[in-house]
Amino acid sequence: MGNKSTPGRERDQETRDATGGVPHENQETRDVAGGVPASLIKLDANENPFPWPEGLGAEIAAGLEFNRYPDGEAIALREALAARCGLRAEEIIVGNGSDELIVMALQTFGGPGRALLIHPPTFGVYAAMAATTGTPLLEAPLAAEGQALNLEKMLSLCRDNPVAVMIVCNPNNPTGALFPRPEIERLLKESGTLVLVDEAYGEFAGAETSVLPLISEYQNLLVMKTFSKAFGMAALRLGYLCGPAAAVSSLNRTRQTFNVNSFTQKAGLAVIRRAAAYERQVAALRAETEKLYRGLKGLPGVKVWPTRANFVLFRPPDAIRWGEALRARGFIARVFEHLTGLGPCLRVSAGTPAENEAFLRAAGEVAAAENEASPRAAGEVAAAP
Ligand SMILES: Cc1ncc(COP(=O)(O)O)c(C=O)c1O
Image (cartoon, rainbow, N blue to C red; front, side, top):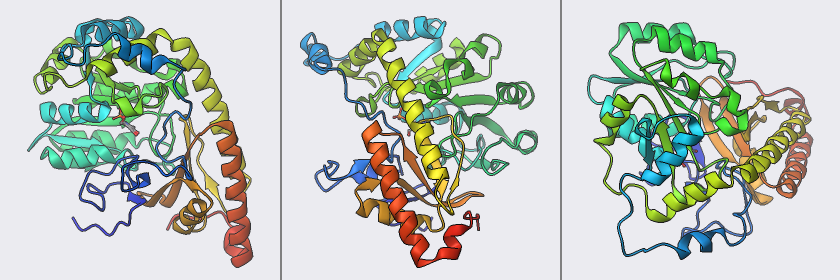
């Protein structure tokens, strides 16, 4: 596939970035040494902006023997996760980030003749990993401007094609939409396929929105979660997938023996022990996301999507120019050159309160400058092409 992308911009379904790698939330902000320039405020990858509790890293490292292999089965961590999720350890598998679990799910259940169904615009890694695992890709674009699943289309694609697995991203990245549980249950009952619900942002939507409790009812339900977002561990790479023991056991066959390192396993356990502190951070980030939503909604010509995650999707009159103008003011937002059905958009993650206030000031300046340059365009809410 041709790639006209420039660094810093992403089409939702591109399978390769400008360097030939898989597009991800994080790459374009890196400088040549792999670091993020200190002068830039990074609001492009839906991370938790708060630092780790003082001393936690040292505390974890202190008791570890780095010369020994990790526990390949990650038993203590899976047992702690099982207790947290109301499941058994056999119903949980951990991954080197949930990215690795997506690959493992497609290696296990996908492949030639066994299609993956997704609902664009959604997380770009699903399509990218379908391509690398030789899994045919089917798409049922979201309805209602990215806010609703097109259930009829999803079910008819499942009837007419050899769909092996579908991924429902809930809340959805990048639109922020939360899909109702009865709709997911309908897919579970009527699709005749595995339904993998990616709840990477579930903590922000609230535990009551999770479909984890349905695992005991549906043999075709898999639920994936990550420590990269609410739990502030993006750099350490820890995701987990829950499902019926038989499906987890199949997935386990594709797992590399030592896929999650010792430091990460111990960090996961430490974070689970401190869950209350993270719940306070999640509450703060929800309030900050709401602040970003209201602030952006007040700008002329900007269409803003309601969100249940820790980010806000918005469409100004010229998303690409806005991305550049925000960057010139020191802020990195995610620029999408084109999202299915929505056109060019920007996505901004909730940072710290000070970062968000500064971001909204900068966005206000950009809107005012655009308004001066083209008063009519800025007065109308940007429409998708
Ligand atoms: C919806 C979704 N799923 C999965 C991931 C991957 O997360 P991880 O860091 O666990 O690989 C992301 C990261 O942005 C995401 O947005």
